[in-house]
Image (cartoon, rainbow, N blue to C red; front, side, top):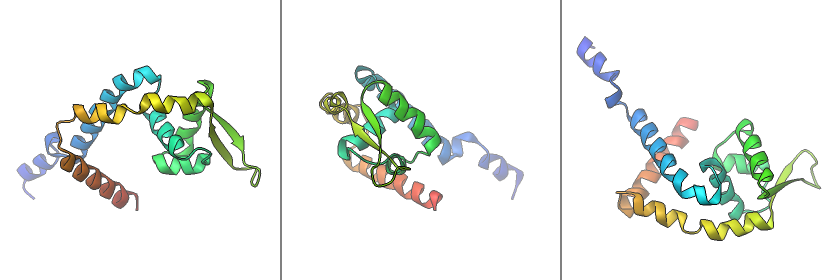
Length: 147
């Protein structure tokens, strides 16, 4: 490989990983403003979306769904519990397992969050088809890298 080709491969502008990283950061920053009214961070919002769909899910299952390890989910869930949005309850069948139950306040927050996906879609310059393609490519990449 020539020196010129080698230098080009190390150029940040040529790295798809950098483009993905930059786009992800921009997306999370744009969500930050939308989530201010809910008093949620983006990772907390992800956890709440899972809980709104599956109230009573285990901590382990939630971590798997949001692709976070227990070192990340534990403090996140403690903060959500401190805000009065959920309770962690020991599973009666398996005392080692902890289930997550939304409080009434956590359940009511869902109605306030309903407009966020629409609002965020309006901010995107991508068509629905492009958004669907991007999601599919990101999912494919994550699955292949994680395998």
